[in-house]
Image (cartoon, rainbow over all chains, first blue to last red; front, side, top):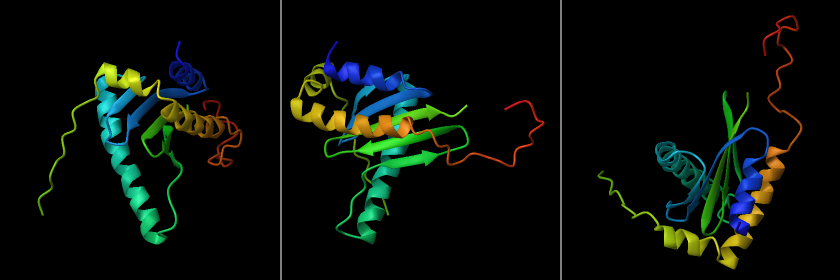
Length: 95
Length: 59
């Protein structure tokens, strides 16, 4: 098993984790642990949200940048870690 | 205002595979995963609801 697969596997075994999506800077899926329809919709919306947040942060202070985005919803928690050439999205079930 | 929709062709399996072996990619990927892992393991629930009826069995 490659280092990449090993890391994904470890992250997926964390309590409550229901999905992991890794996309490149252009929003193209590199890896996903959920079905393709859910991957497509999550990627489209979360990528948009992440970009919007990034812009907002930079507008407020041009020397600042987004490093981690954590969302609490009624049903789950979504974590988005943006980096230079990839974005990792993790969905955790709260129930 | 019209919006132009950019269509990016998906990565091929070959491209995905090559990327996951790139040391530079792996380095930043592992760093991000560590942050997520720490966030996932945080014990404190900031949204805990203390006003919940204590006699209500169902959670």
